[in-house]
Image (cartoon, rainbow, N blue to C red; front, side, top):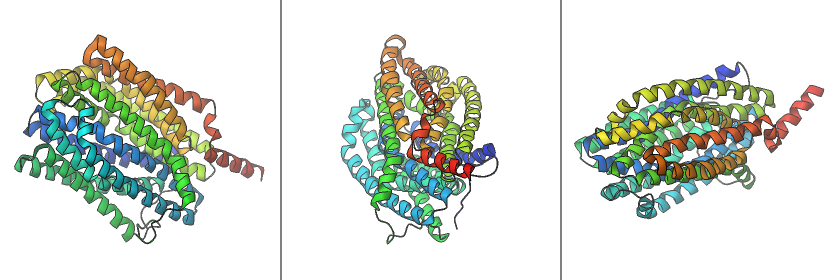
Length: 458
């Protein structure tokens, strides 16, 4: 049997840390896919090539993260059934998720490949980078089924409390990506297209390894083609838990793409710099992202086991851990910004843009460090619709208008100011909802609280 961990017993903080650490490594290596592409393209081609990879990232994430939002619902659903010890429902739920995920991934691959040129123009890509950006993004879309497949496997494993197995797959795939980038870009001279091809092939390796692992271990989820089908009841539950997260990811990444367009309007060097800034920030967000995913699994299993107080304890511990790490990372980033920028590009103007931006946006690390555990808790308790509402407010009412206003007065660094105000407003909204007890109104939370009350009266 593949690895499974019971998150409903033993020390709360220890469980969260033990679960989160492999996720930090996995997320770091996944973030390195695009960063390694940017490194090789920036070092062995030119600024136009680097900008091509940079502007493609936010566009790709809109489709990728929207579909992956459903995997959050899958992880929570699996976690609840795992906590209840309900193997039959777990199996039907998993096979439903696989079928839906495959259909959606195929649709994204076809649609993305067809509309790549229009998407590249939509974000004001510098003219010198358009051709390379189309090659890069179209290749990523064609192979995106592999990326979706691996991320779905990771979601299943998180639901079972297993974050270690997928880490091994990512380590192998990340090493393959570096080797392939070297072969295609340095030796083959294929530029941005070679970087995309290397990423798709590496993700394919991780997906194949994941499926083989589940089947070899005779897991309750075995990816058997004969068992994969859509069960309506489970499909409904998946969309109940996952659709808010999918819409949240869609709206968030549309917002980030809009911000990318604002940054791109400052010219080629600013466009390349913004891509570097977003990539460096993504590394700083890795611990809180991992704690987010860890807490979702922790909370969903404990709700399934009728232990809501333990779920709240998990939130408190996760917040303390996330904020402590973010404070350290903010200080390091502020001092190391020029050196980090020079790893991607030696252009002095790009380095100047990156340094100025990160010395402002590093304060946002604390805001995201508070927001991510709160999001994980709300998703784990079945309150994903709340996170969707908060994203609408924080991104479209606060962050984008703030970026438009601030850039008029501060130039490029105005986008960095908006990166603080957006998540800060979200933290206020999440905290108010949790503190008021609003999280208890979800179907999953009501069931857990009712069962807990019955147990106390027996």
